[in-house]
Length: 480
Ligand SMILES: C[S@@+](CC[C@H](N)C(=O)[O-])C[C@H]1O[C@@H](n2cnc3c(N)ncnc32)[C@H](O)[C@@H]1O
Figure 1: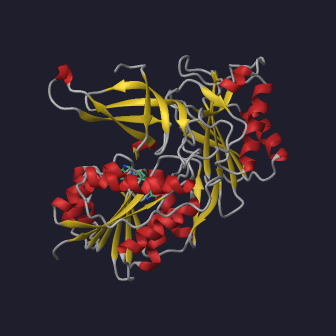
Figure 2: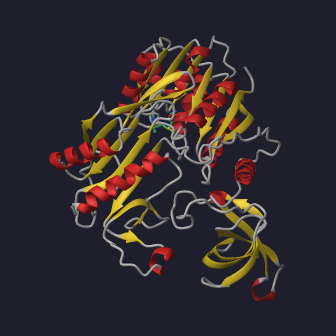
Figure 3: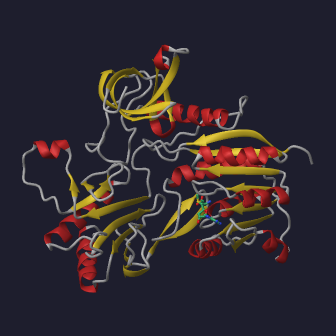
């Protein structure tokens, strides 16, 4: 068996990152020993499929392949809605029935907890599906590139296509080329109007696109933030330098054509790093932010502040965390990794006092604004780097010890220092919200070795058509 070989495979299971699992019988080396089962992870294949797949990576204990032909299709396959499906990196599972998507996500979390954490008799509550499976994102980040990726369909048209201007989304593992798109079903239709207006406006004026190779050019990203619960709509153009005249013309013409836009901003990113945030920003129209709500609470969102991208599901996620915490109104709660304070504020009416800890300065000031906006008294936000011990700060400010700690760290999970700090605080319950069940279970194992037990988990689907999984876990202290 070697790289490039094509095998016929039956897909039996669903693995991390949405890959299909096939198992083949492997003969013993040199005819000695026993035959064994060998796992092949197949990109682009689902349980129930029989596919022809080409081997792309071969390791001792497993291989990876990509499906090149579906011989017989799984019952879970559906027709993808988007014409860019299969090329665009955005919705890799759009051809999988939504019920099957959530079923597989649930099974995957359970497998991770079992295989990586040893949690066999897991109390796993059923996944909360998303009501909207299209148009669910409140933020879209599009890229501009001076090298356009052409789809097979575009090549087949035989038409002359400008390959030096693309506004759209990246395709997997290719960072210097962008797929030019005129329609995306993740945000509402007005977002597509903005996308197409922006392309036409800058292309017709032959405005340059930033290239990290030459570290020159103007256009970098187009970020659209659309409130789910208000009419607010932000257009944020990220550029390498300032051009007031051009921005004023762009804004004036766009707002006239698309009057639903409530604010236009220009973020200026002077760095080589391909990120859609600026070193500073200028507001060209409106107030420079939008408001959205989660549950009964209103939040102010600026161009660069973190906010859950699926507002409707965020409410269900936070509600699950609050239910798991079993709050009665008498508890002191620490919300670690509090971002713009959304969880702290959401649970505030059910707690005596909430303390939110967050390292990003602008997120802490957004949280303070959000606290004022919602006229909340019993929440405090503290700027703290949780990788270092935050206990000296707790003592210095004479904060009461928490009854409950809520954790919502980034994908790479918690630092062991933070786990130690939480153990020292000895809360009755720990609610762990995570967008990466693998690091979540790694951290939960540490808590379980230090006096806590895992009571239950519940996944929440925040990102239909993607393999991303959000999961909430409840831990309780074993002995008081
Ligand atoms: C997944 S977000 C959660 C935000 C918030 N709970 C929410 O639902 O919007 C993780 C947060 O952890 C913060 N963070 C990352 N590293 C941190 C650290 N070392 N100390 C404190 N906060 C950190 C990030 O800035 C981010 O706001």
